[in-house]
Each structure stands twice: as C-alpha cells, then as structure tokens.
Length: 425
Image 1 (cartoon, rainbow, N blue to C red):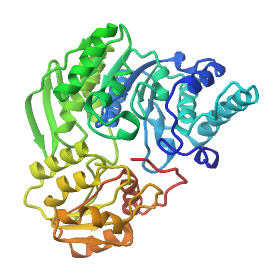
Image 2 (cartoon, one colour; image 1 turned 90 degrees about the vertical axis):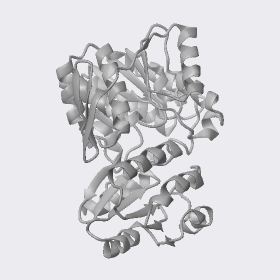
Image 3 (cartoon, one colour; image 1 turned 90 degrees about the horizontal axis):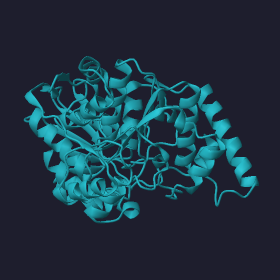
Image 4 (spheres, one colour; image 1 turned 180 degrees about the vertical axis):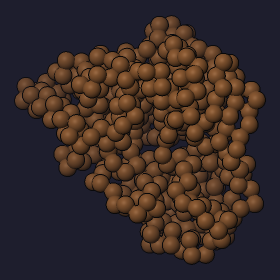
C-alpha cells in the first residue's frame, strides 16, 4: 500500500494514455485476454450497473471478475472474483507480479515513466483474474474512457451509463467533449448498450457508433412499475425485475444491465436473481435507524439531482439533517443548490483528504443556499450533533463525497478501517 500511495491516486499523478499500460500488459503476457469482458463507462450509475451485470453473470454460473473504482474502506473492494473481494495474500501476489514486470521495463528504459496508481491496479486486477480462472470480468472505466487504462480490453459488450459533467479538467468542459471521451470505449463490431442520455450526448455516442460500425442494442422498456420504500419492481420483456438497490434511477441502470446480459446470452431467471442479489454500498444505503442514517456518494450535479428526487419522492415530510463535505474539484455550489433546500439543517464537515475543501471555505461558497448552516470539526462531531437533536423519524443524510461516505460507514459500524488510499470522488 505504501508503494502504491507514492504513485498518487486516480487524479493525483494521473497521466492519461495507453502506452504504459500496453507495454506493461505485454510484459505480463496479456492477462486481459484470458477472459471475456464487459466494459462499463459513464458518469453516474457505472458502479451500480457493473454490480448488476456481474451478479447476473454469476447467477448464470459464470466465474466472474469485477473491477471498480474508487473504494470506500479497503482497496481490496476494487478487485472481486465470484462476488468476493480479493484477499490480502492474493492482492500481494498480484502486486509482486506487476511490480517485477515494471522494474524490468524501467531497467530496460522501455517506459517513459513509472505506471500510475490506476494503471498498476488495472494490471493487478487482470493478472488476478487470469490466475483465478475468471471466465467473464465486468470492468468499470476509471476516468473518461478513450485514454483510460482499462481501454486495452477487447470486450464482448460495451456499456455507457448516463453521462453528466464531472472531471472536466481531464475530459473537457463541453457536453460533446465529455461524451466523445466516453465513446472512446466503443469497438468496431462489438455490441454496445447506451443508457438514456441528453440529446447532444446521445448524438455524439450514436455518431461514433455509426462511424466505426458498433451495433447499438435497444433498451427494454419497463412496465408495471411499482415500489416499496424506494425499492423498485417492474417487468422488462421476459424479466420480472425486483431490485435490491434503492431509487428510481436504479430502474434505468437495471434496464441497461438487462440489455447487456441478454447480449451475453444470460437467461431471464439468472438476470432476475442477479438483480435481487446485486449490492453496491454507499449509494442510498441505510446504516442506522431511529433516526435513519442514509449514505449516498452524490459528488456531482447529476448524482445530487438523483438523490434529491429520491428524498422528495420517498421521504417527503421527514426532517432532513444534511451532513456535507466535498472535494475542491467538484461543482460544490451547484450540488449545494440542489440538496440544501431539502434540509432542516446543514452541517458542514471537513474531510481528512488532501483534495478536500475545508469546512470554513465550503461555508463561504455554499452557505447562501440555506439559513441554518453550521461548521463542524469533523464527521464525528457532525454525527453526534445530528443524532442528539434529531427525532426518531428524522433522516440524517451523509453525502457530497464517497470519502465522507466511507468514513461514515466506519463510524456507524463501530469498526476501524484498514489502511486505505481512500476514494477520489
């Protein structure tokens, strides 16, 4: 972990491009070719959709791999086989294999620079999947798509979830620029599934698909839509879907997952089982009751709008205590403008991460969105304050950053976390 931390994280030290990862995977005898893959890009819903696809494949009897980012508590969460996180021993074995290859390449001056944190983890995941006998891996793009380290894959299916504004420093500031980067994962002749998109975004994706000969599968439609406490059920063709992930937005993610699984030949019964079993922590996750403590990693405007709709639809009339912290590179004023008006009270908390906005600086930016904004020393104080004053029927919502969500999971579970580089969103 110390070695990896010296390389930065997904953003600190990031150098987009495929030359280093290609050279590294060549030296490792192309581990990514040992299994079939599903490649998932997008801005919001990537992780949930990837989790649903993996669960459906596992229910169909495949030995699966899942590579996602970031993690909430432990870096092991990023690399999973057959629904289980990589063990510490297997993590170290994959690390040793990758580091030995890197050292040889550097000694030969075959690399322009040391591979990045994310490139190392990508190579480790592929090596572990090969060693573990994975048949199909679901791989989430780390950043963008076109130049992301995962774009060395020759996937069986590509998936693009809803696209919104995020990481604009790296992906460009316009809708078309961001969409073009995501469309970079499309491959000639490889079927793709697109979530519903803004018209301009959809146009960019469809244009690229036509240009290179990518067939785009239609999304099934949802009928007989119903829910209980925010968990949705619906019919999609022959699939009777019952979702384990909360929120109406998960219906869209599930429809995308269903389309991808059908392209892979998965039977309706296995798809149904996968949707019932899929889990994705830190997204509309309840970790305590009386009062309810709800966690959601809404770190961009698109995620904030989804979260606001969920609160308004399923928890109208309940007092909301909003515990909020964020990273400096996020659209914090826009996110606050979406979420703060829903709250009875807002508690700003600093995050112990170098890219975080201090609570005092955050207050200067966002306090105008609510008449009752208070600065706290940290999440421990904010949670204690909210719990001491909230009624049993109130909701305490922790949001703004997945790093803050991970910290809340630790505090609410009473467990200490293992060493971790922390998420970046």
